[in-house]
Structures are given as structure tokens and as C-alpha cells.
Amino acid sequence: MSSLLSARPVSNWTRGGDPMTAMTTIGFPDRLVTLADWEQLPEDELHHVECGEGVLYVTPNPHFKHQRATSRLMVLLDGQLPAHLTAVSDIDVLFAEDPLTVRAPDVTVTSTDIGEANPVRLRTKDVLLVVEILSPGSRRIDRVTKFSEYAEAEIAHYWILDIDAPLLTCHRLTEHRTYEAAGEFDTVAQIDTDWARLTIDLAALTRR
Image (cartoon, rainbow, N blue to C red; front, top):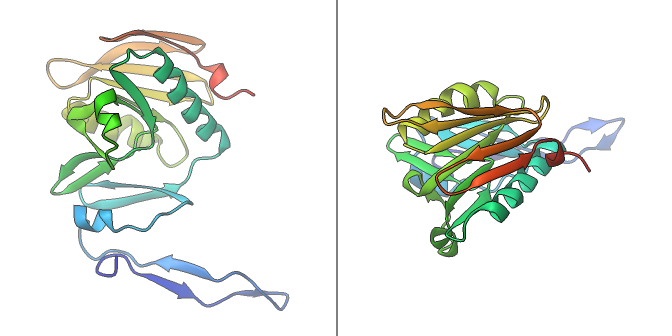
């Protein structure tokens, strides 16, 4: 993205006379990010990137336990959902184009028909449930910023999972576009939704 983010090499460092692998840095944007900019962002295997009101948020990719919990939760949910719904992990969800807001929840539930269409991203109207797993650097965003964003976007269910506790906190949307408590679980969660009763063994999400 030459007009917004520019990649440039940094001179090789040396340690004990041995050259180290060349590094690349990304220049800071000098304006708000647009959807066209977002679509040109390079793939980044080391970082989790989102955009809030045109501002990029970059955090390190989550560690092993977080990724294990994400994949297991996605499979567990998918197996309990009715046939017309499906679960997916780490897909972009477009909240607004101007200013651009794009989130990538750890787990998202959408319709099977939309999943079969194989979209590059979802829109909020396509989303029924999002799950965020807390990690260093995301706790306040997940508990405060996204709590407000997801409610304003009328996403029916928002779950926040702390795998270290473990603790799953569930919220459901009210008619006032705010969330109310729908249960807090520290062992085995049993959550009633509009489409199914979901059972999740929290400890099983991370243990071998």
C-alpha cells in the first residue's frame, strides 16, 4: 500500500560479526485508512490487525493456548448449531466504511448460505454471535470498545472468554441496542440462544 503504508528494509544488524536476517518496517499512515487501503494490506503472519474509525490497531498474534481455544470453540459451536448456521474463526467483519471499522472476532456465527458463498468478509447484519478471547493488549478493547460497537451494530450475542480464569461471560442484545447479562460460567457453560442450547466445557478448550 504505497500511498498509505510503505514497507522499507532496515539495514542488517550484526551480532558477533554474523549478519542477522534483514528486517522490514512498516511506515505509519498519514491519514485515515479507507476500505481500498485495507484491501491492499499485505498478509502478516505475526500480527493481528483491525481498524477502528480509520485507525489501524496492530497486536501480536495470540499464543498457542489462545489459538487452540479458538479452533476448538469454533468446531464445538459448529457441531451444535442447526444446519442453517455455521461458525468460523478470524474472519473480517465490516462495521462501517466511512470511517472504516473492521473487526476480526476470534469466532463468529453466521448463516450457512453466507458461508457457502465464500465471502472475503462479513457484514454486521450477517452476524448472530461473536466471541472474543482475551489476550494481552486486547482486554480493554474487548470489554469496552467492542462491547459498545457490537451492541450498536445489533449483533445479537457477544461472548467474552478469559481462558486463564477460565471464565465465559455471555451477553445478549436488548431492544435498546445495549447488552444485558446472559450468564457467566467458570466450568461447563450451558447457554440458551434463539437457535440452540449450547454446551461448552471451558477447561476442554485448552487442555491436551
